[in-house]
Length: 436
Image (cartoon, rainbow, N blue to C red; front, side, top):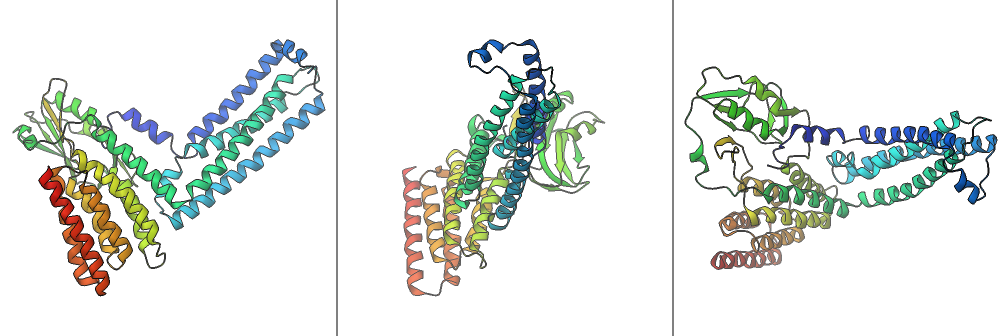
């Protein structure tokens, strides 16, 4: 099961390794050092001498080479400092104006990682090439390559500034969060069978051993493949009682092992659960949902009072929720290669997901007629694409909005506007139910 339950521990470790401004920038920077040594070899062997002679590039003086290399090295250090400063400014603006949890996604921005790596590679290349400058050495290719790296760094820096300018626009960032959430939902639902009413009947009636958490923190990773292998080795069944994103306390039960063995080894389950101090967006659909809700709630707060940002967040969030309502939840029951039930995963229920996305926004928009009217319209649009069995969930949310409106809206024209919008939305839900 993709993303919500990682299938491969190595894949999860690789994703964690490539986050932040350490691994990828260092790898690109080291490539600059290797490129410098490769340039030395090409210059020593004279592999490009004919090409240089053809373009009348006969030689370069030692002073000229040192001047070019030292100038580029100094410029790269100045630009690297500028990039880090600009990145920290963007972090501050994003945390203050959009959401503090966006820093997790900003730190994984490939454009920033490549920018830092490319500038570092150009700097390291220049320093190594500068060290190799000698009266007896012909470094024409090394100098040309350094100039080309400097040009590439300049054009990539322009692209980096354009990317940064786009990321501090709240509407563009909401769109990016929606794209990430939709990708996670599509990956989750792509190849998984739908949940069946009799799935629980497949759980074998065997003695139960409880596995408890060894740490306190957030569940960020569950290796479903490894759990299936453990269940096969025990000739039993494993029921996971938590989902990614859940905060667990040390000693809290997180899995049930059903097996006929009298003393099964439960310590091997420890490596299948990754527990961290903070939640991670990978494998946790609720993280992106909470992020979108947080942006809308911040926009609706009295200190910000930005209704149109809240409307933008509601539009994208309704599209993501409708995607799940259209498809339905995947099955929690996982079988092995021989179709023998081996694993039960706790999947987020449809009503819980809808409550997570809708209830906080309904409570925050009680007194904002503009947002409330648009919120009802978004639920009406979601009902047009959701499955018939999920229509009662949408109808329940509309009923809750109507209950709140009775006590929170005092103006008669505003009451009439919301009442008309609710009447239209309820009729749409009823028509969809009859049509389905």
